[in-house]
Amino acid sequence: QVQLVESGGGSVQPGGSLRLSCAASGIIFSRYTMGWYRQVSGKQREFVARITSLGFTNYADSVKGRFTISRDNAKNTVYLHMNSLKPEDTAVYYCNAEYDRKGSWGQGTQVTVSS
Image 1 (cartoon, rainbow, N blue to C red):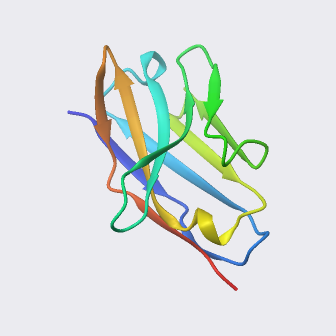
Image 2: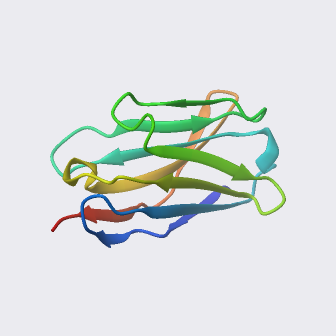
C-alpha cells in the first residue's frame, strides 16, 4: 500500500523560500517517477515538477528557475526547494508517485505566500 506524506508547508513572505518533503513508503521508491502538483481551491490541480527514476527533471514554466526538485532514494524522499516565492504560488501542494502509468497521491501541504 502506497503512502505519501508531505511536510514543510507554511506561510512565507514574497521572495522567501520553503522546502517541501514527501516521504514514501510501501513502494520500491527508486523505480518511481516522483512529482509535485498544486491546487488552488476551485481550480484544477496543476503540474509543478517531476523527477524520473534516472534523475531527469522537468518543470512547469511558471516555476522554472525558482523551484528545484530532488530525490534521496536512501531516504525514500522527494523534495521541492522553492525560492523567490510569489503570491501566485499559494496553493495546496501534493506529492505524486507514478510507476507503470499508475499514480498515487499524498494528502497535501498548504503553502501560503503573503505579505
